[in-house]
Amino acid sequence: MPSIAQAPHSHAGATRRVVPGLGLAAVGVLAALGIAALLPTVSVLLIAIVLGILTRNLLPLPEQVEPGLAFAAKRLLRAGIVLLGLQLVLGDILGLGAGIIVTVVAVVAVGFAVTLLAGRLLGLSGTQTLLIASGFSICGAAAVAAVDGVVRTEDEEEVVTAVALVVVFGTLMIPALPLAAAALGLDADVTGLWAGAAVHEVAQVVAIGGTLGAAALSAAVLVKLARVLLLAPVVLLVSAHRRRTLRSRADGEAATLPPLVPLFVAGFVAMVALRSTGIVPAAVVDAAGLVQSALLAAAMFALGAGVRLSLLRRVGARPFALAAISTFAVAATGLSGVLLAS
Image 1 (cartoon, helix red, strand yellow):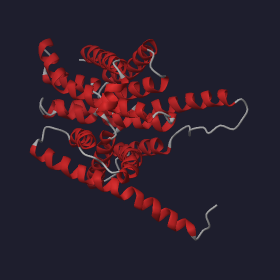
Image 2 (tube, rainbow, N blue to C red):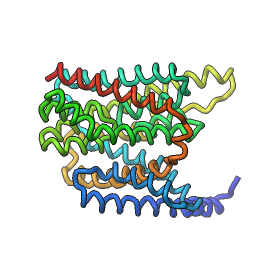
Image 3 (cartoon, rainbow, N blue to C red):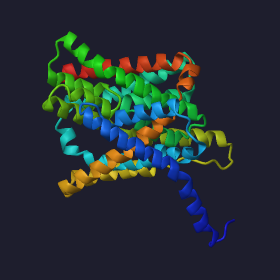
């Protein structure tokens, strides 16, 4: 056991190990901000993911950056999720009306049910299927990472694959959903509601809503944030199931159980509750939004840097088939609910 005198040296060593990777992520965020300034309709988070993918697959990255990228992909992401709670006001979400709220719940429930069933039929692992269901039904890469924090996936490639599929299919939805809406004769407001109910990442929803006008963008983001709000109960259910599973496999021996409510999820809920009281000044909300965007952009860059295109070729067609099925289920449920509620 290290002595008290040795502890600061150990902490300093751990800090030095993450600095190169965090520095690379910071450069990625700055580059994403620069590109977003030139392309204002494209989200910084989406750009950061793409830059991460390009960096990993086009440049020879030294081993020294890996600890920092891992830190950004997990710790910074969780901090960003906590601050994301300050962007949610329960009153605004309740103001969407019962029909849209029921639609949001149905999207998550149907998305999970269809994805879990299809994953089993396709022969994919339970954790891979669960990660894809989380990302496609709730809020993309953040949900993948949140659920991974509970199930503690042993095969890191499953996490990377789920994130990569969120990027690929969510990006395809940016042109596809407006085209489908136009073919169906939907107006901008209904299209915005559908985008919020159907598209995987907040960033991708913003990219669609930004082309539809301010009112449609606001509606799209609000519906999407309602889905984000369901991250907390979903993680709670997954954690409870995981604890029961581990207890049943322990055979009386001690087992390492995940917390029933992960700390970052509790922080997210606390921030939602705090913002909903109305006591948080607008300047604080705006500042927190900037910090949250920076943290999530760094995390998205790190998650993108975990995507090896050679891996996607190696995993085969089944995860892609599941992603397509999940996307269709979520989009169809969202469209049905929005049309019934409108």
